[in-house]
Amino acid sequence: MAFAKWDGEPVTVIMADGTRMEGFTKTNLINHMRGPKSEIGISEEFKGKEKKYTSTEISELIFPPNENASTPAIYRPVLAQKYMPNAFSKNPKTFKKPVFLKCVYDGENVKGYARACTDSSYTPSMTRVNYTWAYYYKVEGEDVAKYYWLDTKDLIFGMRKVLKFYFREFPELVQMIEDGTLDPNDFRDDPTIVLPMMDAILGQRK
View 1 (cartoon, one colour):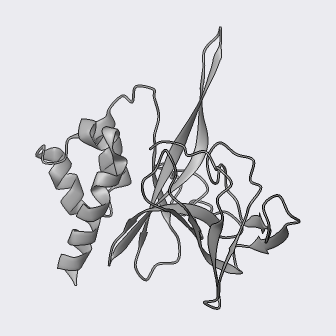
View 2 (tube, one colour; view 1 turned 90 degrees about the vertical axis):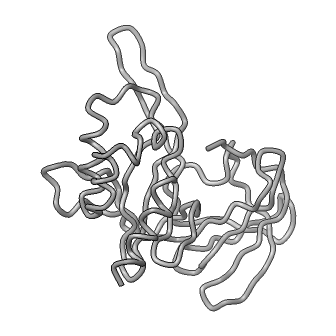
């Protein structure tokens, strides 16, 4: 997923009460919303004085298309897990407030989101930092978006086993991994490919 440079075009803001407005944001970032954000400044004029809005006041932010993206980028405030769960954490911590996440899949039973973040690799001689994405899924009717993947450049040993752990709530997906229907390499190329699969599985369970 490419990072998109904000080029000064106005964003559309949909408030929690359903009202809409257009404004400008001085995020000063190479992408729309790097890092976990629960507040954003919006001004009526380009480079004007900003008014701060929290994630509880806004239901959706819509950034216009640009040279890197042919479709609008939609961000929503979501209560999300702060870290990827591990085998010893049954209830991973969430951010204290809903954070703005980029919507990457808008299904009937599952919503998919991504959060821009950094991935650091350390060696005795150097530290390498990559700007990347963390991926989440949120099941309809549940309160928390679950962190299921960090898009990393490093090799992941036992990736098939890792995937089966993170998708253990979806035995159907685990079976697809085991029988080769879901190839870990395809997943690594595009972590969002599992979202419509989850959506279909949950639809069949109804």
